[in-house]
Image (tube, rainbow, N blue to C red; front, side, top):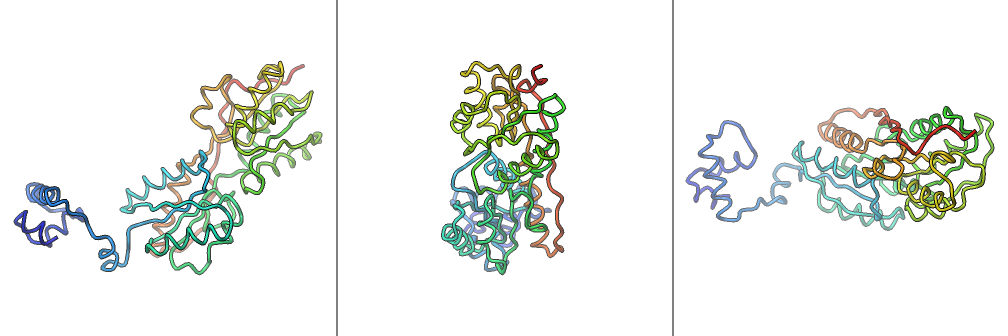
Length: 323
């Protein structure tokens, strides 16, 4: 910093003010300092800054090892919101076993992150985080467990939006392609589906197991039982794969069978037919997560956030039940 000050002909305090974007610096002075920084290739010593300020200005993020639309979209929102608040994300991945989670936590905490976001799609990921961690921790994509420490889309409400839509169209024979076994959000959609059938006195047909992939949806689509007129898929790629399989079987969507997905990935609007799906606002999840963490770092008392509300996007893959 002293070298930059000498090159620019200013004090090192002025360099510090420019680096920290203080107001009141004359534009020509700011430009001289920035030019000196570029010429000298100066980089701030963040470790030294953390020692001086007590903050690293870094938010740690633990992502699932296998990238999917929801966690990836949430990460982008976290990054943008963190940057606006003066922080940077440091990201690592983990599976949901205790050893992998422990390694991810050790990696981030050893780098003095100021707070943590854990995309805890599996209950074991919640259990692996030590409650005594001395930085604020926020769980995302949990299905809304862990109350004041969690931000999640309301999975029950989203599932019911899809099923109510199909029921109102006259459908009475439903089948479900589920997500990965053990993941909280997949289990919530599955449980809500079976509860809906029971509430309306509808027959429980076999659940078709999936893994979020279009390939799994295709295989499940081949196994959809005769006479089923409504297929609820736990995500959009599986819905697209299922539609392909159904059409190979000579069924027309939605004339013979209606299909609903979940997530509203960008491609859903351009599938054939356009996919009716439940929109999850992952951007809002990321924004709320960062806002809550910033509040916690500033000493605000914790409060349980309301779940993020989903909405139904109706497209051409659903229609009236066949007569």
